[in-house]
View 1 (cartoon, rainbow, N blue to C red):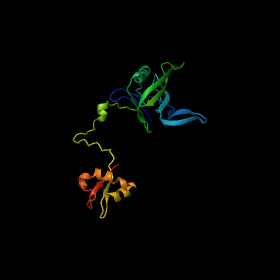
View 2 (spheres, rainbow, N blue to C red):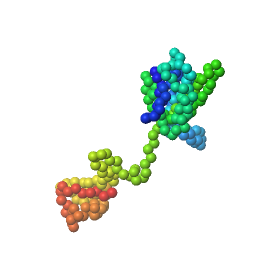
View 3 (spheres, rainbow, N blue to C red):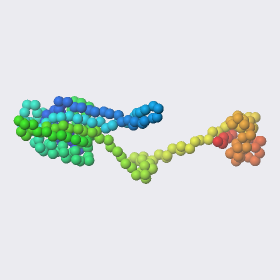
View 4 (cartoon, rainbow, N blue to C red):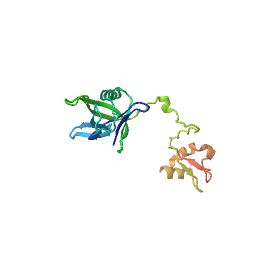
Length: 215
């Protein structure tokens, strides 16, 4: 198992000594509302950012517990961690032989020096998983998304489609209104909505035509 922190196209840090333990903190957000005669009620709001924490040290000299012989200078390694912490860009945390291969922000690291171990630098590291937020202008949000060589699809029509009725032999506008609306007096509304299709005489409707039923 190896621990790496690396920038895309930038520096990387291979921890010379593996942490003895890695802690991953997952937590859900809640909004607590105080309701009269009931008390506090929690409403789930979504997942908080995961935190990954571990502790290790940078030895001043190579020893058998190190993962590789060409170990980094402890002070330079700590300066690199500080630079990443102060940066607004994420770095990739990789722990081989595990599923951890994620972009993180280094939110905190604590350094400690111990007597009797000159040059060694111990540290506690806290990483928060990175969530990318894409902000678009109002014009970009309204514009259709186009891929190269693919025409933009028309926006779907969300207007409700009015129902229709196919005229059967023997039908009359009064009978259709009674069937569709429960009142024969609505026949005038049907006629006004379909006057161009029916013609000047509402009593003469052709079998097979599709009438639009007004709301």
